[in-house]
Structure formats: C-alpha cells, structure tokens
Image 1 (cartoon, rainbow, N blue to C red):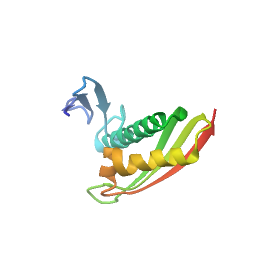
Image 2: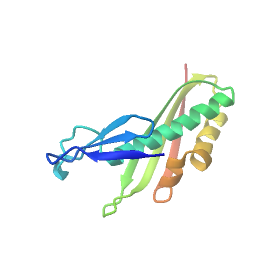
Image 3: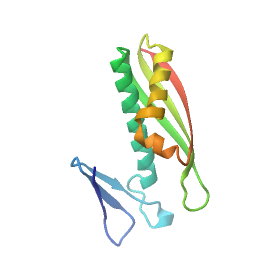
Length: 140
C-alpha cells in the first residue's frame, strides 16, 4: 500500500494525497496553524478512515451471517492528548445499524469482531486510545 502526500505550496498548509488505488484526497490545517480550513484536517482523516474500516467490517460480517442489513453509520467522537504528540486518548464509536429483523447479538458480535480482529485501524489506535462503542439498531 502506498500514498503520496504533496504540499500545495507556500500560501498555506494544504496537502493533497494520491492513493495507490488512484484517488485524490485533500487535507488542510486550521487557520491558527496557517491553514485555510478548505479540507479535513489530517487527524480527521485518520478518524474517517477508521470509521470506514470498521463499518466495512460490520456490514461484511452481517451480510455473511445472512442478516438483512440495510444501512450502517458510525459516528466517532475522539479526545486527544493536550501535549505533543497529541495522540487520540479516547474514541467512542457509535454504530447505527439498520435492517430488517436484525439480531442484536449478531450486530454486537460484528462490532466486537471488527474491533478485536479485523479493523487494522481501530486495533492500531487502541494502542494509545481507550476504545468504547455503542450500538443502536433501527428496524426499516
């Protein structure tokens, strides 16, 4: 896996990332750090990627278990250390999983498997952060 990140130039703190799969992502800093707030912060991208990683796992596990999953959202709320390096210290994942007649035990199992076995990103972040999760199931 490879990603190339390039600074967009001396007028700010924006960067573009080109992924090995050929996609472009923009990132920018906060105005107080010299950025222009035109794109997500790099640490927001870390959270977004982690949310995508775990949501992918949850949906895949539920589908393989023949659950009638119709939607999956995960909201991540994180706290960071106050001093450098400002690593994540606490992250809560709130899953809202929708479907028809979803078994609560199956949804909880999918989330647990993601966090403990499959989601490389959340497992990596658990090295510095206390990871918690909540699950909401919506019948559709």
